[in-house]
Length: 438
Image 1 (cartoon, rainbow, N blue to C red):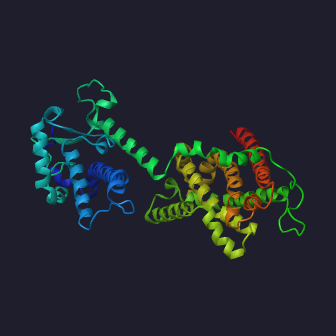
Image 2: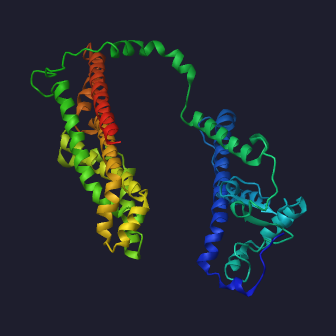
Image 3: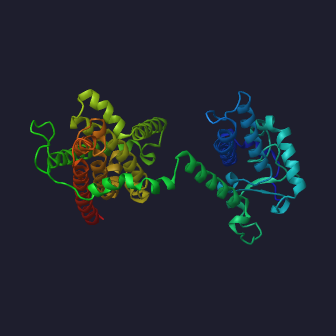
């Protein structure tokens, strides 16, 4: 084995250097541990679905006792250790790691067993490897007799060529196929998919489909009722368009300067810059994680139920987060050559941004902004469900009138047709504009 030489120079490696080298191994182990935990959850769920509810207690649920959770955690931890000790795991493959013996040859079974035992005996003392004189990247159970973990990218030129094996003959292929199969099975049961129900109940919804494809445009320009409580489809469609327009334009104006604060290549030069970058990305992620329909609930209570201002505010904040994230990624992807050339002339940071970054990102910014307007139009049709205003107000009104109005579903179909036409027109316009920009 071309193992690293032990020398006094090994002590020169700092703790951050050792942690950086060992990070792929730790990440691979955590991924494998999580994979085994997910498989355990799937097994328990399927046992509950196919055994416990059918043969033990129909109204009950198979749950682990108090001592069962520690046992499950330790069992999955042990399986992850077994995978790494024998060098067969999804995590090792994903992070480009490989267990090898002397001369980069695959370790024998006796070496793998020795490694498995050594891993248990030295598990609690592994942190000592970060402070001892061991070569960089080696843990206590690594060695010539037990094998070492290598980064394939660093030793690929020294490895003997191997004949590729079919995916179903590899550990990685079998594990990935098993996890995908388990995920599909769980998803099928958890979402209660029943194809037979689609066939058995098709007659109950046939009239709805017939009414939807035969829309009635009675209220295209006329009010829904004489007292004017609800306006026409045209009125609400214009309201929706301007809600989305307001949210897109104002959101883009706010997101534009914030995107520079959320870009690593602009802010990542000192501790204060990294702090601002982290805070800004946190704000973007937090706002994006809250759906606009939830924001509309808050603003509807604040400014009034059914007020389009509530919907506009919800779309505004969601637009800031979405465009801020997209804008900042475009800033990080700019060509660094012009930036370095401008900085070499002695320009200040803000001058580098104005003359080096902005000219590169303007086309993408405009394209993303137009696409966001398209998204906001579609989102504005939904937030009316919680009082955000827009065309959705009329859509849900007619849906709730089913049973009282003979043509309720026909009116719903008319609103849907109007939404589709407007979205198609705006999509066509934005596509032409993006084409010109490109």
